[in-house]
Length: 300
Image (cartoon, rainbow, N blue to C red; front, side, top):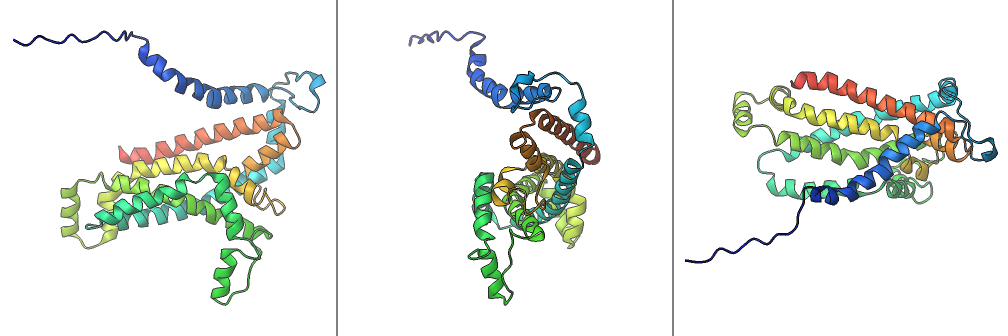
């Protein structure tokens, strides 16, 4: 009879899993929780780093009242909302079209290749996307103007005009985040039971009816996630816009995050900038809760 091999005692205790999680938790605290707490505390102080001798006194809600009466802040917020309602419908429509195309029967190999290709824009950092955008929309040698010249149209100073600069950052944002929408919708379509979808295809030849009555309920959770994540992302969008236009020309692309950066790191009024950031965080939470309440009610 073979002898049983004794399992060595590795000395694992009840706290061992927590030690493995500790680096990730500490990193989250350092780069996520601590800056938020610091911004919240700073928002209640007169925190101008050019006047350190003042001692950064506590001033209550004065910074928040100043923000609420700041017309430039509200103009930047309205411009951000305009940017949001410009790019999001296009990203959702294009992403849904790509997902429906790849979801067709017999698209297995193309679907696998497309999934790899769609990840490339998402893996590109905002700063790099901004640099790519500056090259594409350059007035003298940019691809955008060469494309216009091929069709007989004159070149256009994209980044030097208000409408052109706004269109340029919108196009680059659409290029980067349409694949994200496509992948989310493709995952939702893969959750549709095959027998139900096949029966629906036999019952109707209308793709719109198939989408509305069979596929849409499985797409709503993904659509909710897309709208929440893109809302938060647009409200904090800074890197790409700063690299491409620095908020210009004039205030044509002065999104709210760019304006907050200018208040905090050019005027050095960190107290007011922190109050603006906290208000932006509250707005993001409200919008997210609104999306969940409206869309998930239909899912359930």
